[in-house]
Image (cartoon, rainbow, N blue to C red):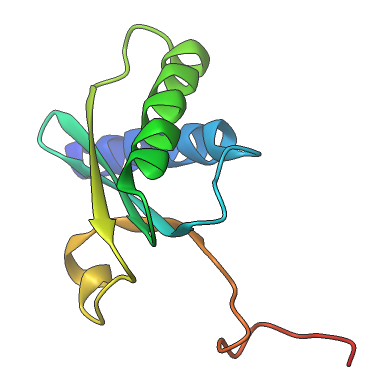
Length: 113
């Protein structure tokens, strides 16, 4: 396996572990969550409305869960909380989006009304 393939396999593993760690943990004030693997670190980014400490708590709990699920080989994780919604160019720099809230304004949001 090439270095690039090995790195992609590791990144995929971190993404799956993060998704599993986030299950049932995302506060309604959180609009989006992304994970980026860069160098020897992971960057877990939350976009939230309201009190940023709520998303920061979600981030800390997610890291704890990821450490338990992944074990000692998990790289250092930095959590960043940004106010509001991701910018239009966020997919270029934020990493892989793991969660994006559906809102009544989004095209994917459907009701039975």
